[in-house]
Amino acid sequence: MASPHALQVLFLAAASGDEKAVTKMLAQDPPLFDATNAKTALTAGGSGHEGSNYTHLDWAAQKGHRNLVVQILTKWPDLISIHDAAKGGYDEVLNVVFSRKPQFPWSQNRRSRTVLIAAVIGGHESTVALLLAKDPELIHIVNPNLETALQCTKKVSIAKQLLDHKPELIDAVDPRGRTALHSVILYDSMEMLDFLLERRPELSDAVDAGHQNALHFAVHRGHKEAVFKLLAQNPRSIDVVTSQNKNILHIAAEADNLQLLDTILSLRPGFACGVDASGNTALHCLFQSWGHHYIAESHWEKIWELNPSALRAVNNHSQTPSMIAIGRGFLREKELSLTQKLSWDELIADHEALKLRRRDLSEKLNRRLQISRKFAEEQCESGLSSALFIPGVIDIVKSYTLLTQEVENENEPSVKRYKGEDDDIYWHWGNYGDDL
Image (cartoon, rainbow, N blue to C red):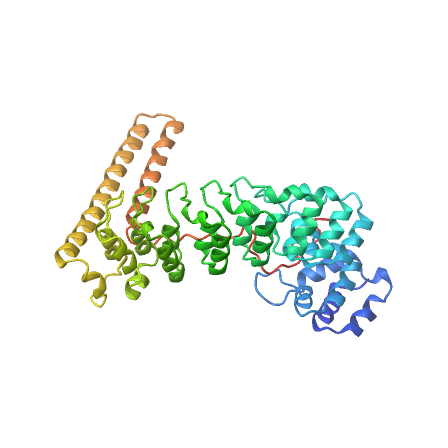
């Protein structure tokens, strides 16, 4: 029986693309290489990256030595999980697994995907067709986020395959109320955007649980091309406000995209006067997110020109945009464009108001902590059970956490962005054989 070291030589040969050596070693008697030793050798055959599961077979796959990888995995299909095999498009390996374990539970979720969704994410049409032919019921399985396979695809050819099997997928929504059109914005697929808008144009009206449509997503991610396509398809979508009463200009202000900001202002100048549920104007949002960039570039002045009272507008937290700029450290002497719009007396007043606000918040924090500590100490002294003591401790922790965050939020920008649920780009042979 060959040692794991001998098998490591085999994997190294595959990684270097030595087809002759790989073919020769695999041609030896089957008993020379058993699955246990192969798995041990693969685990020990990493690329030298400390703490990494990256192996020589990963390296071979990345270098394009696909035939060599397939030869090895066809012999030992349990060296790769079926999800990784599906994502990599290793149809030959999946066929071997099918023949050995025809009753395998293909619908199980692993690493936030089913085996079909793994193939969809990998973009392998033949693998999708293979899996659906093997088990048509896979089309009904969703991932742990309850997203359908259609919501995870970036390729129109695969989307057509899925819709041929289950046409109603195009209207499916996940628990957050997101449709496939929301998802293609998150997954940056303009090909799919065109396909869905042509196939089901009314999806541009669909809003999620936060009352955000696909245009909101596109603006937040700064996808200029997607924004213009969505506006051309459905001009009225620009007027939809979110559940927090944010208009599309608020969202553009939170995303670092000056061109979209200018475009929206030209289309809807009245949005410069809009306030969200927290009383914030678009100018508040600008300074809260990327304020110093906008002040330096003076792009915020377009909002001010449309809404001259914007710099003195007070939100629900008694903050003006100027106070936010001061608190973020964005207001400097060289930034004269802001000081020209406000008198020094107004700027000083905002600075003093900000200091008073921070002092009040700190005092409020200390008062709550003192009350919580006293409550907890009294419980200890009275010998009450731990069940009564624990809420006192929890109260201290909550008071400290919430109020500390409130104070820190005076200084820290709030950067919000949408993100796809399955962002891993690289994949490896982790959890060897766990699926088999």
